[in-house]
Length: 95
Image 1 (tube, one colour):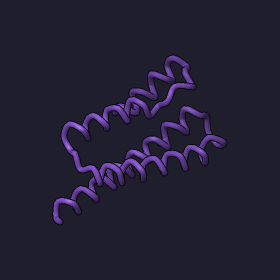
Image 2 (cartoon, rainbow, N blue to C red):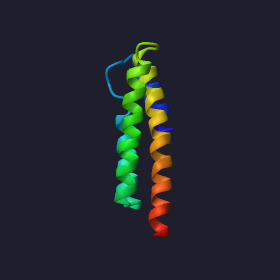
Image 3 (cartoon, rainbow, N blue to C red):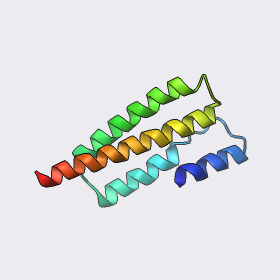
């Protein structure tokens, strides 16, 4: 939801230079720090999500406009990061 609102606001103001991921990263960072301090799972999620975002941004930008490429890459990276966090935090709890 935060990603969609950020994208809509940037599109409305015709702003192409601000990062679409910043508000999402701040919200997730606060959620993680306040409620789910599984540091290993957080590290795996951050690294895997970032790798997906950087890879997709490089691949998408030549094909679509920058704001759309950033939004799509960020959304995909968030899904991967949340999935990795879920898997890694469950493995940690069982151990």
